[in-house]
Image (tube, rainbow, N blue to C red; front, side):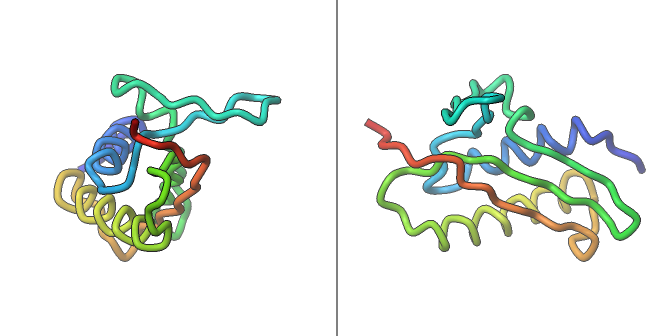
Length: 109
């Protein structure tokens, strides 16, 4: 079975949004210091999927809730996305590398 990188990005984006402490996916504005939160329909813009000979790399650009433990949220996020990709897209977790990029912190209020 073959799954496109765009579908993988969508699955990873939705899995990330379901994790505690994640406010949203982020898009880095070119040439700017600011980050924009992406609407739910465009989550894939915050996910970069690359295929290499050794497997698949998924880079997640996220904005976390202010005050959360970044390490715990990142670990949870990584394992949740890996599990979801393994269940839905049948991607072998051993060939999957997930990189978390915390592009900002934001209060939910």
